[in-house]
Amino acid sequence: MGKKWLPLTLFLSLLATPTGGPVVQNIAPSGYSSPSNYEHPLSVVTYNIRGCRTDSGNADPALVTAALRTLDADIIALQEVDYNLPRSHFVNQVEAIAKALNMNYAYGPSIDLVIGGYGNAVLSKFQIRQAQQKKLPAVWEPRSILDVAVDWNGDPLHVVVTHLGTKKSEHRQQIEFLRDYLQEKSYKHSILLGDFNLLPSDPLLETLRGTYQDPAYAGKLGLRTLRHAGAPEEIDRIFLSPQLSFIDASAPAIGPSDHYPVQMTLQREDLAYKKAISSR
Figure 1 (cartoon, rainbow, N blue to C red):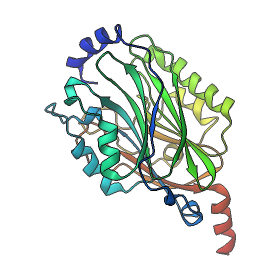
Figure 2 (figure 1 turned 60 degrees about the vertical axis):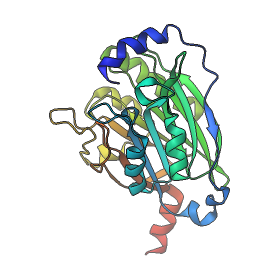
Figure 3 (figure 1 turned 120 degrees about the vertical axis):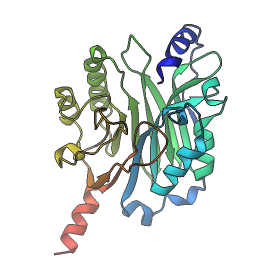
Figure 4 (figure 1 turned 180 degrees about the horizontal axis):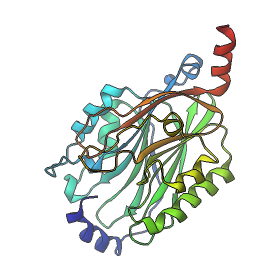
């Protein structure tokens, strides 16, 4: 979040009304979830869009949409998504992006202000079954997770998107909350992704790696996810539940944000095993 907007945002958060929970809109055709798509690799993206703002402060969802269109992902997780805020011209950003890409969406505000809000979102070519939101432990600025279940050919695929705080003092509690949440849910197929504000070498991430795979770290891919020179290189991550199989990943240098999108291709582990056996 831009520093010049932070005092106003924190003041308005004191006046915030209780959130009614995440918003789900299935606007895309329902025929995408089919056996052929289920068996094909799945393309997933996480992207901190900075409220669709450029470095000059102009908010334009069309610029984010153009970047995402080139990736042609099946599932997209977004952070720092504005809803009806003056800094972004009172636009419902997730709705604008989802409609332009013909994707379904779920949106969960981390802060629900008097005039609008901002938070996390998931876009999906698959139908969205349900979404739930949980607050993360935080003192400085409210943070949350958005847990979205999409219909992956009859099976649920849970997409859990988050954006951890910028204060190191909050990171341990937030990471432990995520670990406990995922262990309690024990989803068969699940993806944890977002802006973690932690470098891959941070010992706190080992807490999550004991539960979920971190393929970019294991493969020493060294993806640069922040654009500006001198910034930490890799703070946006995609974790996979054990029954998902990693194929590849990249962080293309596109889009107006100070972050680059991270894209990962994956598939079900049982399908990867079947393909390996059939190729022998």
